[in-house]
Image 1 (cartoon, rainbow, N blue to C red):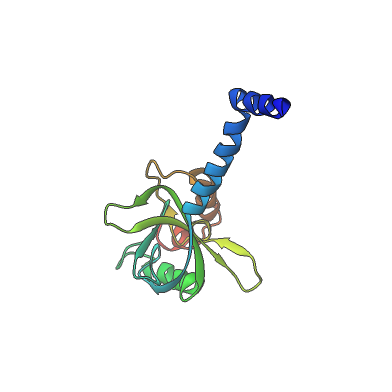
Image 2 (spheres, rainbow, N blue to C red):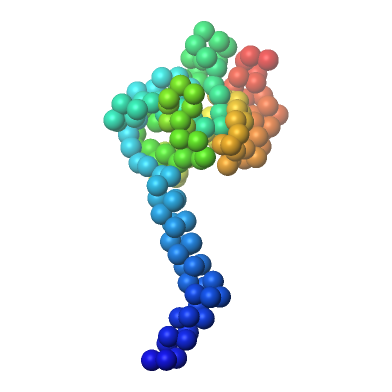
Length: 162
């Protein structure tokens, strides 16, 4: 009995007990930053309305605005990707943008069961550009690499608008 008490005391003073707590906290934080829902309306190439009526702005990217070059194509691609489909939302640092929309990374599963990172896909295929806004930079380097590929391959807006 004394050995167990000494072992527990040693674990706490050496930080082993707090490490387990930290891992548990990290797991809870990850769960709080992820949400599943369905897209009920596509607003444009980087904004959707989800099942409960909230609007979600895709973090880290910017698609053409209405009446700008490649707007219609970006919106249509976004509709094909996510409209009426179950998506997974992932939060970075900020919860909302300056317009009150949720700011998230989106994931959708295609017909083959493959998960698509929507933000990356839209940039890589030339339907959006990278928009780096601190502190939401979790995928900045990945999105920049996707943009470089789209520019090099002259995909989407990179061939039609520039």
